[in-house]
Amino acid sequence: MSKQNHVPTLLKLFRQYGYEGLTLSKISQETGLGKASLYHHFPKGKAEMAREALNQVNQWLETRILRILDGPETAISKFESMCQETGQFFNQGQNSCLWAVFLMEQSSDDLFHNQISVAFSLWIDAISKVLMTAGLDQTLAKERGEDAMIAIQGALILSHGLKDFTLFQRTLKQLPQQLCEGIENSKMPLIAT
Image 1: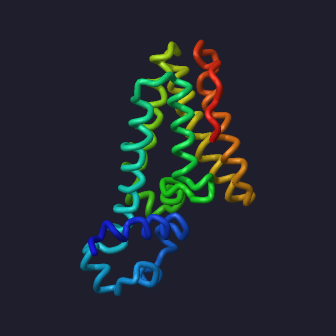
Image 2 (image 1 turned 30 degrees about the vertical axis):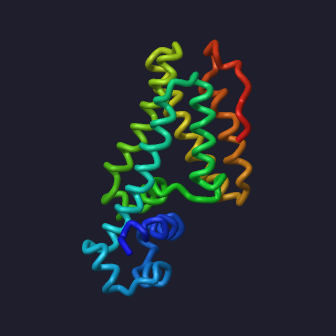
Image 3 (image 1 turned 90 degrees about the vertical axis):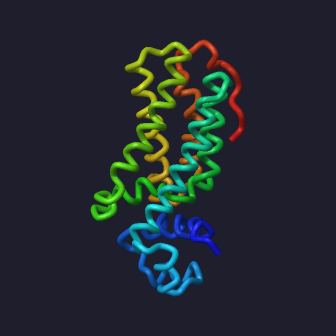
């Protein structure tokens, strides 16, 4: 079995326990691999395992979210699809964001900050590009892209803190209209999420 088969389990574990809290014993137990096998698949240890989990999140961003935002649809349709995909990826708010988990821990922030920063910037820039194409000026488009990340990340954290995942779902439902406020084609009906 290749190491890629274990990455979804690693992603789940790092989301749940963070970098500092996740032990090799727990990884071994959940993957069914002994410690020797773990090091065979991931010679650089836990840091490599975390990097692979992070790569999976970044691949999702590139292959799903950025592709949606670069598509031919109207701005509102792109944002509705983005929010629907985001809801699915985060299991309607029940899954934590690995980027946020790693950034909150000093040791993992030092290891992964640049990679996470690039991912956030790519998502913000993609949203901004859609909004600029729809007619917003660059400054407002960038602010709305940043506000979208604040809304998504904040809703994830608050949903977990209050154990009420409808907060995340409500945020995703409202976000497309908020992003398109003042844009002529934003009056189209929302896709149910």
